[in-house]
Amino acid sequence: MKEHEIGTLRFGLDLSLPLYEQIVNQMRGSIARGEIALGEKVPSVRELAQGLKINPNTVMSAYKELERDGLTETRRGQGTFITHSQETVDQFRSEWAEKAIDDFIEKMDNLGYSLEDISSIIQRKKEGRV
Amino acid sequence: MSNLGVLLQHEWKLKAKRREKRGKIKMPRVWLYVYSGIVVALVVILATYLGWKGQTRFVQIWNFNWGMLFWAIGIAVQNIKREWSNETVGWWLALPYSRGNLISAKFIASLLRWAKTLALVYLGLFAFMTYVMLLEGDGAKIPDTLVTGVEWYVIVLSLSPFVISLGTVSALLRRSTLQPIFPLIWGVGNLIINAVAALFLLTPLTLGTKCIFILISWVITLGLLRLAVHLLERHVVI
Amino acid sequence: MKDPVVQFRDVNLSYGSRMVLQDFNIEIPSQQVVGILGPNGSGKSSFFRLIMGLNQPDDGEIAVLGHSPGWRNNHQIAYLPDRARWYGNHTVEGAIQWGGDLLPGFDSMKAKELAEWMEIDSSMRIDEMSKGQEARLMLIMCLARKVPLIILDEPFTGIDTHSRERIMDALIDYVTEGEQTILISTHEIYEAEGLFDSVFLINEGQVALSGEAELLRAEHGSMMQLVKKMSHGGRGL
Image 1 (cartoon, rainbow over the protein chains, first blue to last red):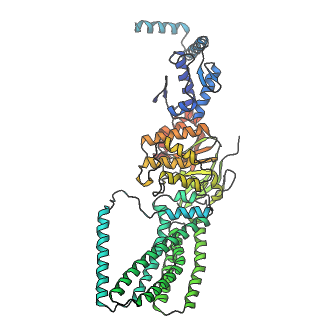
Image 2 (image 1 turned 180 degrees about the vertical axis):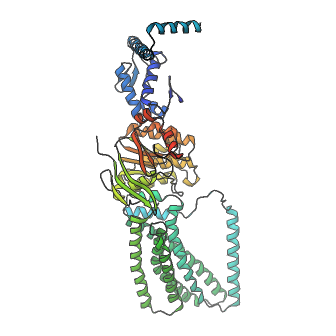
Image 3 (image 1 turned 120 degrees about the horizontal axis):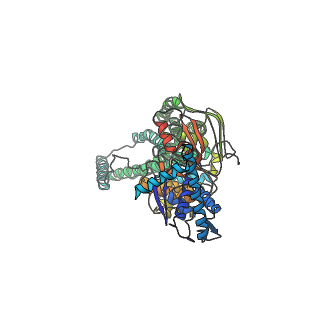
């Protein structure tokens, strides 16, 4: 795992996993957590590729994916910016949370845990933490 | 400028200067001067001695041309070998020009460089001989001796294309899949050079015979250069 | 799908009794950064030399940019030879002049820009350079050319980290702008593998594994680890 910092973005890339997914997911995370502000300019494809030492085509397709998410917008001649809409980010964030929960529940279901089992485990975790 | 012209210019500029290899230390310049000075002093002493003794007859001296022919072969071999030893052979052979152009540029550059080296050697020799003859007070001999010298220069230079093409082919053969025939070419080539040197230096040939020999050597030169091109096209290993 | 840039069919190559490439088949897609990976002595450099027509195959068919290899084809290829050095008597300026005179498609202005950007002093003599500086110069000699195919044989080997990073940046810059196909061979540098669109792993004179870099990563993890496995006696995969 190699740590990189490009502007306000932080990445930890693992060259033994697909890079495209790592970039998309880590940028989504940064946006959802608010580490990169609304309306902020994201690094150019070249900058990010050079910063991460990866193929610009990979960065380009990751940026396209973020644009499909609605998280970024490209302004002709100016570059790519994070969306201004807090609403879009919030909506995206809750969708992802939903998806993460669904995935989790499905996995637990596979192991034979019911929703009740899960919530009691989570309850215990909460108590343990406090 | 034509491709050949540019290639030739490049070859001409290539200096024989070796890169410093690991573990080799360059001789400090001062010492080079010191040793050159000693050599020059010895030569001057010898010349002065000869001039003082008198009766020096410059006849045998032209036999040094025998060695000159082998010096020429060395220059040609170096010119090829350098691409490998300096690890530039990949650049050289990847050039998008006909192998004939590559070989011609090397050949002509070697020939020009050799003509220059040989001229310098002759100039040095002329200076030496003139000094001796002046000391002997025999100034009248000078023009004749110099004319003989110029004749020898022309003869050696005329035989040089053959020698240089032989050096070029041999150096390439050693780095090709046809390497097994290298000793053969090298042996026969050296034999021929020695035979020609013996003929020219030790026997009184007429001008006509000399010209015939030289012409034959030029024809063989063309054949050797063609062989060099073929080696580059098909057999050289890098 | 465009025509492949390089196509080998059943190519055999031997030096004397040593087989170097054996029934070698490959199709290199165009306009990509292609990694040619494999342990030392696996045949990567020989493969490149065949593309350049510098060595001749025993048999088989080779097409490079639609033609058979040879000097007539090489005006459209920039080639960084394996373990190469540059002409020691040149200065950087001299080398750029040389490129402008002798290399088709060589853009001297671009070369000067690259030299400045790669922190190479243009009046410096090559035989006074460090290995890393010389490597950077040689890369400039390739990247300053407008040609459809660029072949870099081990551009990272034996070079200091700073030079390596400069070279990587220059390559990324180049890929961002261009539509060329770039073939890069390497046997060791883990960091370089993020550059590749697709990868061919070569072992013992054959293509052992190939595909899009991202797919290979998903399936096998890091490609350099695969190479390492191969070079430590793991025959086949």
